[in-house]
Image (cartoon, rainbow, N blue to C red):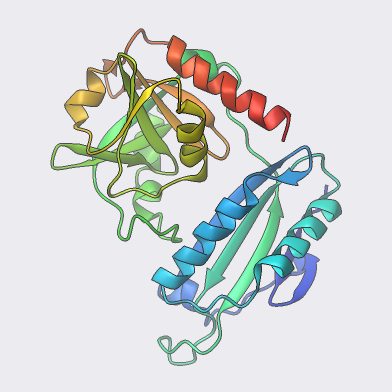
Length: 274
């Protein structure tokens, strides 16, 4: 199917959309993005994603050139043009063009439809392996376009036959490269609350867990994660996905735990009826 891109007020095919080499996103890494998907043809948690997009723009001091209602109409048009039952949508907001490679005058906004790249079904049972790496993202509360450490580590992740990287610093974990981390200790659900991007699926999971588990949002030591009963990660494409190995350490039973399965079932039920 063909994908399309909204670029500063105009929708065209992805192949026909071009951005100039003086863009500050390219020259200075000055930009942000957001990413969500549809279920049953409807954007999932649109209000929450828009809230996060606007907050990222404010924190990066990037003027937002489009209002929420207009953006929603663009999104629905892109979904329709994709011809797919469900697709992903990516917002990219940059500092715009700068002849002196520094001065921002007008931002560039792209809204792009994309294919969804789902998790392998068997990984919801067996879980995934991640490698541990000492690092905290710059401005972690912002969904910026700076993913250089994740890109640098691609060869290491592949060599370890892992799926992702777990960031930690001074003995405390933060997040995976593109998703949040949760652990279970008994009936307590625990997740880091600092040095992270507060994901929308993270927020959804916390809402679903209320009334079923005790919840703690706090600092989490790497040793605590390694000794946890269950560990999982959450994101737009992963939903609730078990983590069963960090480097050479097997976590929990080495497969999805019953409480993680319970939360996965809850979120699967929610998206079925979205």
